[in-house]
Image 1: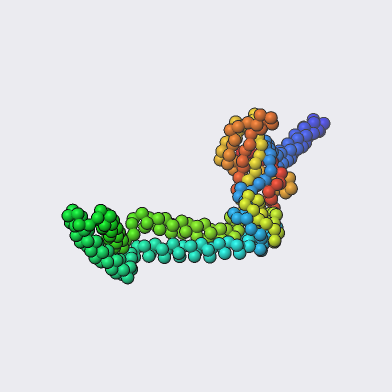
Image 2: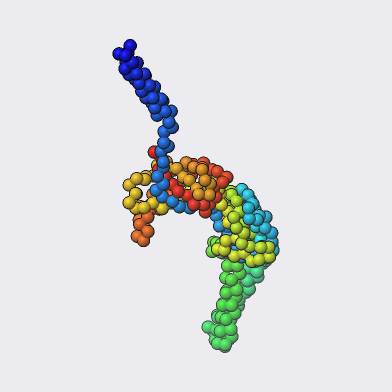
Length: 323
């Protein structure tokens, strides 16, 4: 009986040890694996890929403003209406100038009127009769002068009258020929050029008038309004700013020593300090090839894959490479 006691004790110890081992293995098997931690290697600010500073193309006073900060707009929506009363007056003048130029050209191309030609023919007939009479008188006086029947003064007077009659006849003939042939090509070209200039001026005025309505160049949200009704809008001065938050990016700065770890098209993870506990997918769109000599950083542009209403331009973002 005494020999059996050690065996029982050994068996009990063995069974007890196996039970503890199984429990430890079970605990190891059921223990959750440690999550892999992303290494955030660059940071920057969230920005909109599409934004616009809206300016005027003409100088004019603001008559009406259709938006305010926070307004949602679509591309092509009228944002600001300018006072274009002066331009409308210029438009009427330009239209009148075109009408006048068109009428002048039509008159030239139509040629001379019949009554003008009839009058020129009558003038030529009168000049012809006058020339013939002067020629007969000259011939008669010339013959008498050669016979020394008339003085030199009378002969010279007949010469002068004949020359005047001949000049009048030639002038009448040229006038009739011009009327029958119409205006010269040079005159037509000048009239056509005047019409084109008037039409060009009209086109410029119409463009200026259309610029009196300032349209939204992109869809998005109005983030700034720098003009009020009655104030003067001038080209080059931003009147309204629009940002499209549907397409955001991050201009991040990467240490130059890590430039070999990133490439265009690489997927990344983005977290924003203002939205704790949430991460966003993105893709590297641009890796600048120039290193900033002062900061020793490289600019990397990351485009966010999905839109989120919580993300806003100006938020601070950190970026990790996706494994």
